[in-house]
Image (cartoon, rainbow, N blue to C red; front, side, top):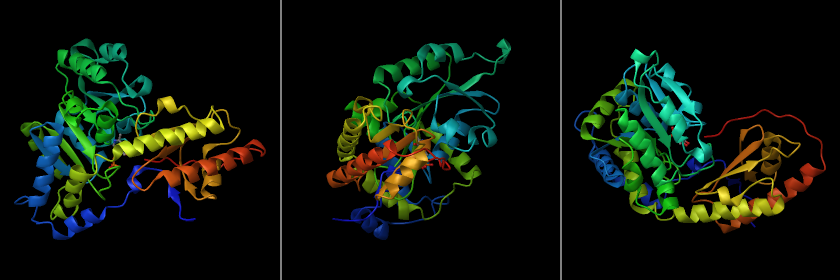
Length: 362
Ligand SMILES: Cc1ncc(COP(=O)(O)O)c(C=O)c1O
């Protein structure tokens, strides 16, 4: 039996495939911000095609894709409406305010889908009404904090309709866009049709080492390219990494269904140990949130006990662990993780609580 660690903290831990390494080694290269790197341009065109948009822009991270989208869509001092727990508002170090000079407002979002009444109420026509103008609505799919949930196409159509009625653009944070498309059983472009822009990562479940592609109209991407330079995201021979992104889009989307199946199995197995910990019906993609609110022990204690058994899990809240399935998690790894949960659960039942520091995961 292997004794290597099983890393369920994130799908960002995935390593590039052999095909990616080969493509990286042989990619045609150029100075991307001078003449254009041919491999980067290929990835941008492919990304735009997958997203059904006119143009794409390669960026080093999903966080920078969101920041550049915020800058390119808005002027300073307007309000951005986001879902409760959104990555933009919670996990991007306040870039929305500190770097883009925008105000953000979180709206209630059951299962990651912004409440439509709250959105209607919050969309503001502007300063004349003593309220900040709404500059952008940002939706997230799959929704990380909500546990990888995927708003329905009907819901996104309603968000777009409400925003358009007020002349407000919609940005889709689709860091895990292809997981969302897999969950809905549609092409990604069906989802992205509901946004003026979309950013997706090739560095998560798709296994490329680095990178995101922001897509939108040609005019929007031209603005975004200028803002990417402003925030220091100008790249040179970036085809070295973009080559892996091309392989990610061409070869790695189809297997995401496996990750979703294993996430459900993980959640079902954990629920069989203790039904208060997880509800497999809530698992829509590759994320499983483990609810420890009925446990006497905090998430860091669970994480430490699991780690002692070779399982890495992310304590994302004091009473919540987050587990993600990905390319390095096969059926054997799910089985080992469940065996560890069974032992830790039994051990926790008979021991006293203590407190350990909490660390956020991505
Ligand atoms: C929904 C969402 N948006 C954006 C990001 C940021 O991506 P990156 O880590 O590449 O900056 C993440 C990362 O997990 C995410 O889950």
